[in-house]
Length: 335
Ligand SMILES: [Zn+2]
Image (tube, rainbow, N blue to C red; front, side, top):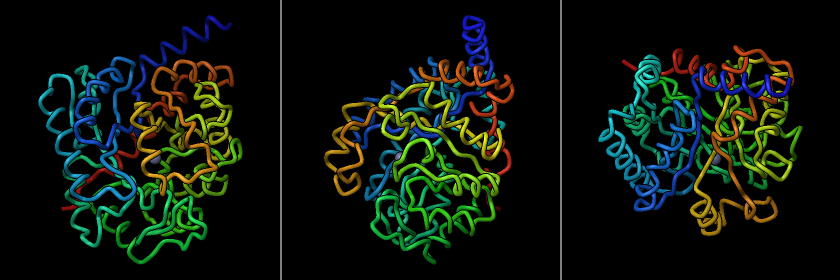
């Protein structure tokens, strides 16, 4: 039985569209550029679509644009292997051509400032989701490490309006609980938690409670499980533990609302950023011990889901089908 599940897991992994909705490369531009070949490893490891972040927290607009520009140039210069998809159909075409699709994301609205036209510009350049508050509160809303979460502001609502208008998904990961609930209540389009695990299985403020999971599903959105050890809860970033978080979500709200946002990052760069940006990563929450897993964990995760009794098509939804559905319905551009 075990061998059968192992072989079946590999077959599902190979057949499925695999979409990792969050990956972090170094913010330092030179190191960011030097790390881009790692994305080729992701493709070899079976990932068809990846969302790479172009900035987080208090990084400036100029810094976001610099990283976005240099990454776009790097991928566009390798168009025989990579696509920057405008539509969900582009992703399917790229996959059948053996190419990887690259999209981008932004963690925190500080870089947008008061200039909402930046949302449209980022969308045109391939940014497909943005979260409003990264651990600390800002003008848009509260963060998950705020002492007091003051909630979604008028500015935050204006950002959501513009994102929905241009076809950029709103993400509520890293937000405070009050802000996340107010985002979920206010939005008319599906809201995602791009990379958040279940607090019922691991008590950490970066994880989300069952009420948030239910409300997210009610918008039509998805919860992307990450492969970060301190958010998974058993001291390791393992596929088996990821499967338990996925199963928790599926038991609560069904198979259409679980996805992947692995949050993989190069280890040394991540440790340095966490140490340098202490205001974003308060002590006492395990950030100094962070380790992240990548696509190499997915066959084990699939095998565990098979052991739980999941069917092939259900697992394919988690691996990428659910995010593809959102792209098909919500990536439309404003006219
Ligand atoms: Zn994050």
